[in-house]
Image (cartoon, rainbow, N blue to C red; front, side):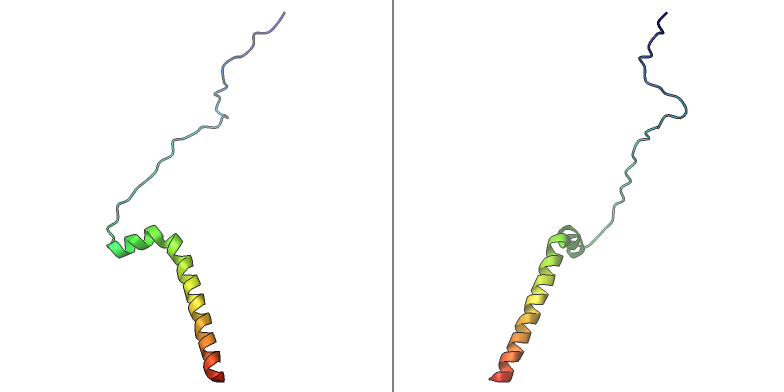
Length: 69
């Protein structure tokens, strides 16, 4: 005698239950400069760091040149 095969998915109490994902959105009033900074900070921060390093190197070179001249 052959057994009947089970062809439907198991939905017992031990099965993992997938719950819907809830995304909560909150509106915030910001001024234009702050909103621009939040939108562009990923690009602007590295550029500002590199610019500061270049400015510091230029100041050091100018200081060394002024000592010898």
